[in-house]
Image (cartoon, rainbow, N blue to C red; front, side):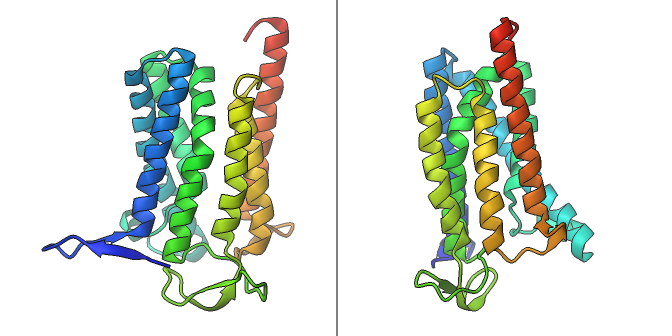
Length: 250
């Protein structure tokens, strides 16, 4: 576990492993999106614009989701949650990134189907790198375990002295095969982003049983309910795209 990699000389600003891995995730996503846009005949400037809006929307969405969620659930002050260094949520990032990326697609005249296809290929790999960052700073770990791969995070962002499920790595182990599957499916899928939503949501739904989040309804956590919603949206999108392809309207 390496929460702090180094400090900027003369300034004392810590450079965290999480920040570096998130930046690496965005860089990897940019390269994958640019490569896929090249395959689809979309120019580099359009790829850069879509990714830039994805980054801005993803960061804003993740922080806003975290600040609102903690305020509603715990009464914690909203502004410190929004402006603090902690609190990066995948669901908020997905929503914010999708909204601003959609705006960029409309503004740049990039067809939704093409752009969402490219984003679907990039998202699992970028997300996996971010989860490695979570592991290195000791955040988002799971329940206590006696399994041999349990990990303690005594100096983590959320310290824990006993072995717990490294749920960050569980998610990495799920997302990497998902990314490879989507790469193989990119020429045959009716709606690749829909497949990504279904697979990413399924993995998060199952992994959530190993985490420590509190159930909110029917024994499911907030993250699991959102996963079910995203899986439903992905399924609906796949059905819509397949019907459109059969009738020649999409």
